Amino acid sequence: MQENVLRRVITLGVIAILGIVGMQSYWVITTWDLNDTEFSQKAKLALIGVARQIAAANNADLPTAGIIRQQSSNYFIVNIESEIDAFQLEDLMEQELIRLGLDVPFEYAIFDCTSDQMAYGAVCQAPGGDKKMDLDLTGSYLPPDKELLYYFGVKFPTRTGYIWKKMQLVLFLSLILALTVAFFIYSVIVIIRQRRLATMQKDFIDNMTHEFKTPLSTIRIAAGVFLRDDYVSHDKRLSRYAQLIHQQYERLNGQVEKVLNISRIEKGNFEIKQERVDLQDLLPDLLNSTRARTEELNGSLRTDFPDTPLPVMADPLHLSNILHNLLDNAVKYSGNTPELTVAGHRESNHLTVSVTDRGPGIAPEHQANLFEKFYRIPTGDVHDVKGFGLGLFYVAQICKAHGWPIDVKSTLGKGTTFSIQFPLLPVLETIPA
Image 1 (tube, helix red, strand yellow):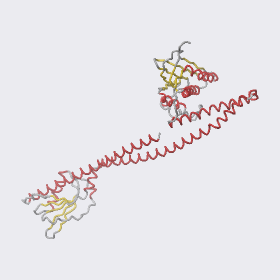
Image 2 (cartoon, rainbow, N blue to C red; image 1 turned 60 degrees about the horizontal axis):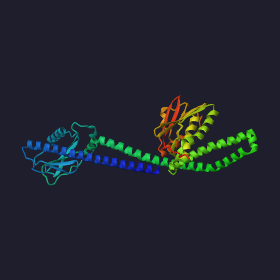
Image 3 (tube, rainbow, N blue to C red; image 1 turned 90 degrees about the horizontal axis):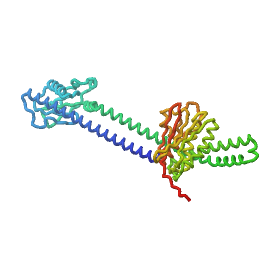
Image 4 (spheres, one colour; image 1 turned 135 degrees about the vertical axis):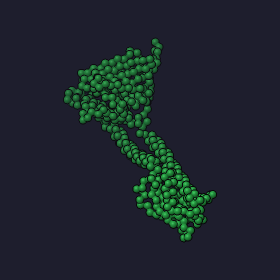
């Protein structure tokens, strides 16, 4: 993953997480306010109902204003200006709370004008609610109001717990969000750590492959000297060793070039120098080299191309490399006796070049991953064909850079076909001399 892409992903992720956290926080605060307002309104309605019933029992009138005075979030004073019976007050409070569905415990006290203090009544369990949570409640101090004469006070000690209980779903979703944010942070840390390790590994591979170029050049020169030496050429054993050295140099140099090309592609500093190339001029050398390899293995290579010129706009070096990769893979993965077919199908202004082998084929679940870097089809502990999984990745990147569609079709037990579609250029007319 490129540095700027990683930075954008993390930035967008942080913005999204902050947005979600902000929305969740707003939702929690809003839900708390709504439940708090609902609790206060129900408590006031219950207290007004109690005050009216007490006043009616005493044939008294309620004050015109200021019946309910909220001293704190959970403590209310009710001014009724008439005598209050404690047992009647307790019964009426329970009835009103049941009617309004407010299943919370409460405690009350009645103002005693003789002592100028609040005469504590009792702690009453939640009417019709869950009483288990209220068993340990003890009485608390209920302060008086110096401005009133006949009044009582009611306190709801579990108001906060009641509101949190009503917000269980919101709290559960908030917990999930917190876990999500924690997982996101952990993922970002892991991604950054893996990115750093991948960069270190990539730099090491790049430096190592560059260091290989000098000894490889020396090996190529030495192998060339051996092959041209008359004494070596007349000695079959020395000649075979010299050819073996040169072949292994070609193999190792090809792998190093693949790694270097992939490195250039990933860094974005490789150049595609497109020019007019006739496939009829480029293909013969590649096909002859492949035919020689197949014949050594008692195989065969069939070709089917139009006789007309096949001009395309391409980088000759990269075009030759990707065709060589496809032909090389077809030989390597065709088994002991490779049977290959290389064909070109022309349709209007496009040419589709296909390389077909009669090998074991590729399972459908692996076909989508063939063009990934370092991907090789799992074969267990058997590694008959050596490689790094870079060839098809390189082919795909070069085709992408040129804008050529590439496709693979394969059937288990029947073989595989790789196809590349090239836009054809107009054929230049030759002027007779």
